[in-house]
Image (cartoon, rainbow, N blue to C red; front, side, top):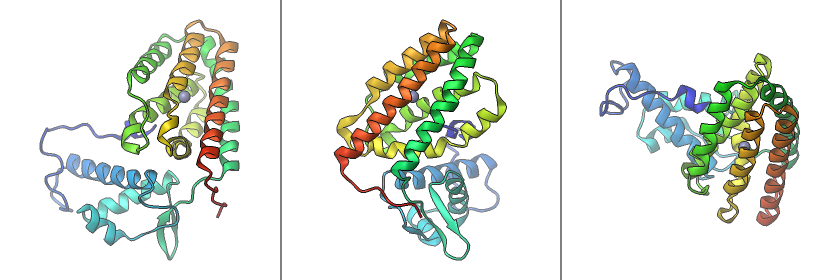
Length: 257
Ligand SMILES: [Zn+2]
């Protein structure tokens, strides 16, 4: 996921977050950290459905609730708007975005199979040492993680590593247009995980780790056709996991707005 790229590095330990609410005079790093924390707090509430789809988001109330000024709330809402987790309307302000429909989730998977399949075939054949090493590291890190939980806080690290793995796969084809359009989908892909993580019992991390290692091995062997088949099977596996979660859940999918 793209969060990683924008995450601030703690420059001075202990200084971050002490000057909450001061609009001026605070060091840039502190403002960035506060903004990041506010964004993460709001995102967590949306993904864990403590703020339900359609809920109107009042900036002053959120600022009171999170004990921050309105600036970091506004910054967070702009980011969440870009990620399609909230929607903004001209006169009524922000509200929590509706869940994607089942049709939309199918369309998203169809799109990913085309793009990621193409990029895996082209990228694996390049046999880039950098890509292969990075893919190995991400695979090993995910295999070592505990099972996915049902809360954003619990599954975030696994989901972020998964997002980086897939972005790396797309980037390996060295097609700038595909890399850019794919990265803009990150938040929507993350949102689709809501369905996979709504029920604790069906945490699919073992299957995901196994499927990733097949993709990695195809890259390591420079086998483009096998890499394409492996990513296709992984994404189709995701479709089956998604459908089984939905039928277990039995909840109606919201209609598009
Ligand atoms: Zn994956």
